[in-house]
Each structure stands twice: as C-alpha cells, then as structure tokens.
Image: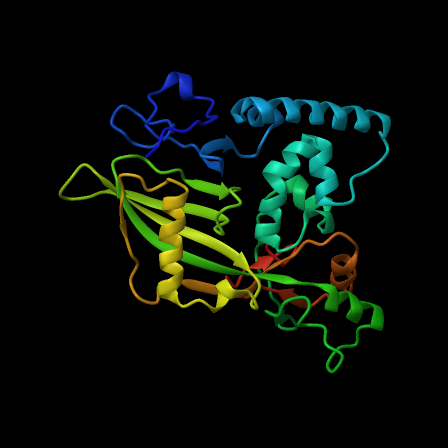
Amino acid sequence: MDSRSTASQTASRAPVSSTGLVVDPVGAITVCDSHIYYRDRLFTYPLSPTNALKHLGPIDLALTGLSYLKAWSTAQLNLEKTPKTAEDWLVARFGRHLYRIFFKSYFEKVWGVSAAYLSADCAAQSVLAARTGSLSLSSQSAISALSLADSIQPSNSTASPAVEAAANRLRYRSLIVVPLLIESTDPFPQQLYVHSPEVAVGRIHHYKRENTAKSNSRIARLALSYFCDDSDPIWQMNDNALVELAIRELADLRLTVDCTVHRPKPNAVIRRSQTYLVPFAGNSLAIVQGYRNKFENLQVVDRNKQRQYQHHEVFV
C-alpha cells in the first residue's frame, strides 16, 4: 500500500507500517480506532481543526486558515446565535473552505441531501450511535417494530393532521453492505469514513484480521457500506455488480495496492431498506416522537436488530 499520513498520537513511540498505522514489533495492529480517509490521507476521527490543517496542501492550508479565522471572528460577534443546520455548525467550527472541500460531498453521499437541510446535531455529533436500553415488558406492553413514519397512517392512527404531516416529512436512507476479504502483509485501518467524493462508498469497516496458514500475509475481513435511496441506481444493482464496484473503489482509493482481493460467497451482500432516518433540520421528528411518547405501554424496537433505542432511529 502507498504511504499515507496518520494523526495517531502514538506514532512517535512505535513502529509505523507503510500505511502509516502504528504496529507493535511483531506486526500486530495497535488500537487506532476510526479514521477519516481523504486525498490518500488518514485524518483523526473525530476531526480537529489542527489535525485537518496538518494534512492539507499549502494552498488549502492557507485558504482554510483564513476561512477559519473569519468563522472564528464571526462567532465572536454572534455569541448568542446558535447554528440551526449542519452546514452552519460545520462552517462555524472549521470555516467555509474546509467545509466545502472536506464535508460537503460526504454529507451528500451519506444523507442524499445538502448539509444545509440537516440538523446541527447531525454535524455536532458526526456519528450518532444507537443508544440501547434494556427491554422491560409487562403483560400490558405493546411492541412496535415499525418506523416512525410507517406507524402513523391516516387509516389506523389517532394522530392529528399536524402529526401526520410531520410523519410524512420524515425520510429514510437505505444501506448496502458489501463484504470482501483482502490478503496483505500490511495492517488495514479498523474503520474508515471515506470523504473522497470520487467514490460512492461511505464507510469501510475492518472486522477481523488473521494470519494465513501458508504465508506471512493476513486476511482482513472488510465491509463496505453504501448509503442510498431505494430509487437510486445502486439499489437496483445485483450482488455481482456491487462486489465489482466495491473492488474497483478499493483500488481507486489505493487501499489494495499489493493486495489479493477475494470475492465473498454468493448472497453475502446485505441490503437494509429504509434503515437510517435522515436528520433534517426542523421539528418534524420531535412532533412525531412526542406523539409516540404519549403511549406509555408502547415499546419500540429496532427493525433490524430487535433492540430498543432511546431515539429508535439510527444515525450514521
């Protein structure tokens, strides 16, 4: 693999592989957690302004610095102004230039809309992990595995017209996961958020690495995540086409140089329709949740994992 930068805090105290990831003397991967992949570089996750500046070229460095100073001075003059959208929050924190080159296309890739239409919380938390709770049921409890929008329909709901209108404004993104095996002597990052706009893949997760029996190379079990609408062309692609797309995009990202890529078994591609609720700015979600919360004996479980969530929907 090509040499690339990493922002690991321990890089100066341990050997570094050709990928820039920290390894121990026998080649085992140390915990590097998640990274952001952009322009053949590994950025820290969560991203900090100083780390972003460290890995940018001289022109982007200058433009980002000026843009960041402008955003900072603007924030000082508007101390009581709270960002309303994801774009507002990102521009205020990183400056408009870094937002434009680093975040804009990624949010559109994941959510299918501009960050100008998404909530500030979506940007502030970047990745909102599902928060699970124990499922406590009584004999009077009712269990719902429907999405928020599907559970409120005019034909079977006591919701007001305002609640029904809010439910109709909710939108979901679907998920495609393509598993691949790569064989390499180099370690592979544990998880990458792919900000590179030239590829469709949004996230690459490395589940497991193990030594092969016949060589010093290792098998990395990868899962490439694609986010889309059910009407998008990628959702209509068959499994073989999706596998070929994943292999091609790994090569385009130069993550499989000097690697052997193994295709998965048939029917290994995972599709989950309407998995992620798009976190639009506004109060539609709060209106629907407020209506659902009136039913004290209603237990909401995730449709795919059968777990109860405090917010029910899973953000990326």
